[in-house]
Image (cartoon, rainbow, N blue to C red; front, top):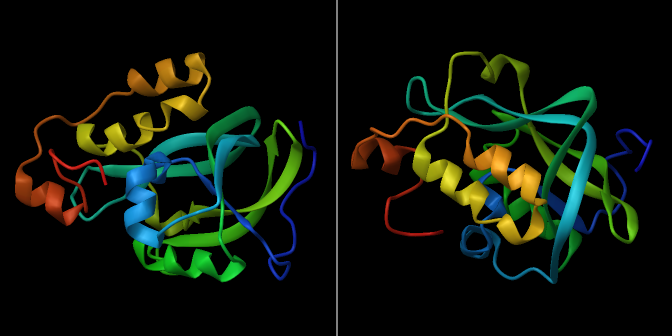
Length: 178
């Protein structure tokens, strides 16, 4: 486990840590193209929450918050070049809704510095749930998650009744994985 905190954002970073819908490899491919490598990683001292406001009232996107004793599992993508992360910024609404910052993540090979998107506090709040289709993108990362973490994600309460128009405004659909 890494005991390192946030690292300087001016370092050249070759990794992106996905904890939300970008755990779906097809979605990532559609958004930023090929990456070099995918592996399991863990953001220690943080907690996954569904508190980021979306374009649909009451519907949440994933976010991470610092919390001692917690950890967030996800997919670590090795970027083809450090500037590739900028291709993700429009999808994450950086810098208006999420802040892109560098954090240390733990991997089987040791700690690595990776880009992580964290929702701006003014874009978060309680009383929101993810859409079932959105959660499906997180569950697509199953191969990179522990069985206990996957089980916890799969039992997350969701909104099941969104129409096609609401799903489109969230950038997801019932039929396509990406």
